[in-house]
Figure 1 (cartoon, rainbow, N blue to C red):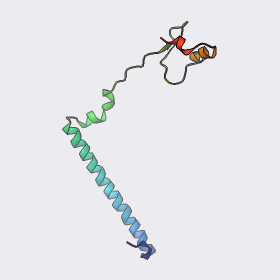
Figure 2: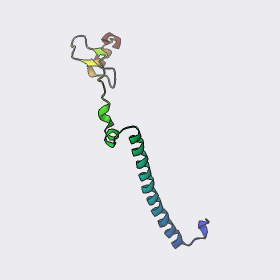
Figure 3: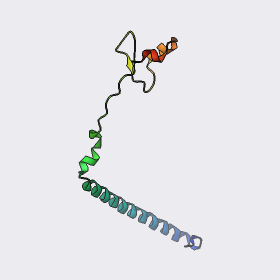
Figure 4: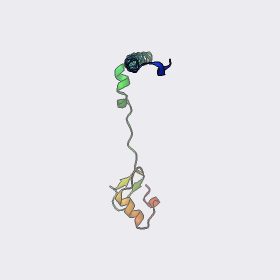
Length: 102
């Protein structure tokens, strides 16, 4: 299709037709995908609720502490994320992180 030969009004009409066809196909494709997903879940013996509520099945175990303050045993750190102020103060005083290892 040579678009350069179309009149301006014809191009605008074509654009509107294309946009409406894209929307129609998008709805069609989403419905098709939804049907495939539901069929796959059913074939695996899962209900829609099982698929959508998958977070409840995955319970994370808390990470154990790797470091503990020598004087205050309530101060612990897993080694993940930013260093707590007490760990940074320990290191700044010239001591090693390995000395805090549990």
